[in-house]
Amino acid sequence: MALGGCTSMDVISILRKKRVQMDGYEVHLTGTAREEHPQVFTEIHVEYVFYGDDIPAADVEKAIELSTTKYCSVSAMLAPVVRITHSHCIRPSADVTGPPA
Image (tube, rainbow, N blue to C red; front, top):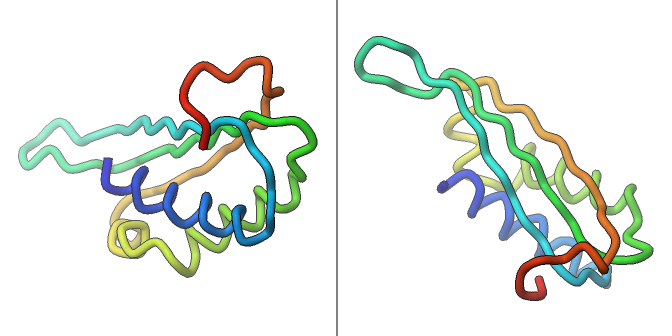
């Protein structure tokens, strides 16, 4: 949860600075933990979902890259011991299900 919140704050902030308009945003995290105790995560996948029309994919990809490599302190702490992967999708405004981003 901390990773999702940290990277989301970065990504949304970066996109707002670039004046990217969006109607919604979600982040989904899935993870794999080891069987033995302590059951720490060994892999985490972060999926970013953006809702809006005409959202530039290049801006989204750059924001995610900056968050994961430079700004997100949670990612920086986890990366040496956890395999973190990322994906994103951009959906039309008509598909938004939650409050505006």
